[in-house]
Figure 1: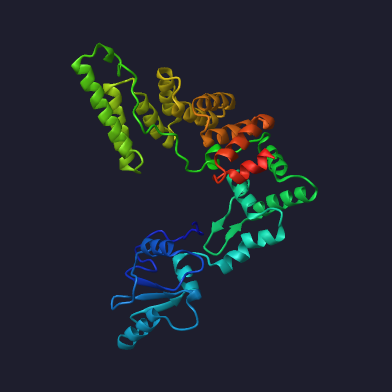
Figure 2: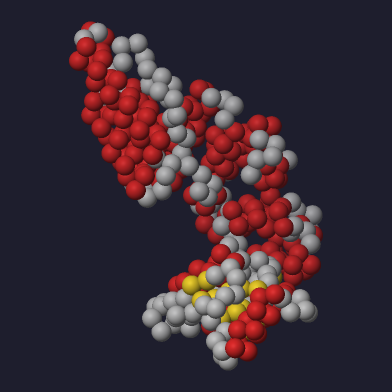
Length: 375
């Protein structure tokens, strides 16, 4: 959940410096986790209950009419030691933390509820589609609502008017994309968000193993076994963020030093480079994997994503077709192929893949979008 940023940057001397803060009730605009981060960023710390160490109690607007146990405990402490616990309401907490309340946000922006009432044909699910296509970008999300700026209101208003004239949502989206960039374009990375490249999880080995392994020598067999061990180590590590991925990268490199033809290690090492936006390095590794194994689905699919990122749509389509030749039941490959074909203006060719995606993933993340574009 995102919220309006705070201008406060240093904990030293901040509004919560030295404070032990306790929250009472459910905050309307931010979750407890985000509120805790705000306090910690500005020099304080939080606690679950009011104790003798508590110095600030934040009472949420939704705390109710009666006094909570935490508020009564704070009053007892203040009766013994006047002024020890500073009792503040939710609005004051937002002010101290440099946040904006929903009341303020409603004066500055247009809330989702307001948008739904004003433009009923652009349903919430369609708004989410517009976000994925990069046509609207919420300014702020809170627990209570999602807020859009003036530009987004204009986009939604235009789509509402197009539908009212008898047009389709799909047609309106295509028109907006064409107007924005002169072609049916979208940011492919934004569309599939944090989706990870296809990963090789098994370690199938052709007869003979590594280059030269066909002679059956003990030394070659030992190197192949050690390479497989490093691969498994990398595979266990590479889904862990930060240091885990770096250790996985080193493990895959060691595996490839021992067995340069170990295709799964090539693919998973390429995935790490791809996640880091090292597209040139990732492309070279995927192409090397495909030269060794032309039926490597993961390499073909991920290479298609890279070609798309670099604007080489024709090459991307060829890679996706290669991937589907090997694994025709992979729903995401149909989806990304459909997206790429739409960007090339080949809507008729995209339709079968939209439909196949819907059939393979009826409850998938993009099933509603696929339905819009397959009709």
